[in-house]
Length: 80
Image (cartoon, rainbow, N blue to C red):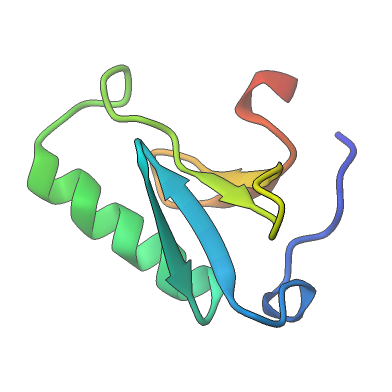
């Protein structure tokens, strides 16, 4: 798998996560993961129905994603 390592320091203005049509800003990857897990639990949707949140850079380009279990990954879910 290729891609830039995702760390909190990689985005000085915060971590941007796009979930559905909304974009959220977080101070850390952990905070983004916890937010997604809470949203997943509230939604009641399973893995095949829950949208996969993209971690994006300042230009809107996806650089990583959060899997259904809350794990942070570089690249795209289509890479695996």
